[in-house]
Image (cartoon, rainbow, N blue to C red; front, side, top):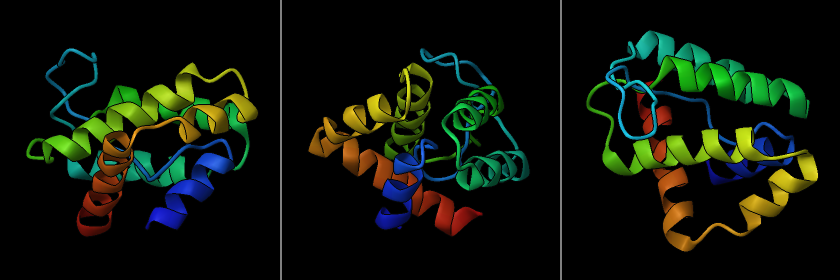
Length: 120
């Protein structure tokens, strides 16, 4: 799964297909999304190949949110992925930001990828 995550980021899409919740947390991302909506938004996100389309898909992830019960580290990874993509100026900036992630941040992205693989 780690390779898929890097590929998506390198495509300007950032990582694994996504998720969110509906009771807004500090990030403003919902915490009560249905698993179906979460997986559908994530699938769309994971298939994007152009940077601008990746930003639109990340915005949709943000609006969809993550399901209740998502592990905290996977939720952190979700928030990070959305932020990475939506804050990036372009593909090169996205890759630069991804390469600067700490080991803890990379583990949260991997936790998201694992959650998606098991749940979707």
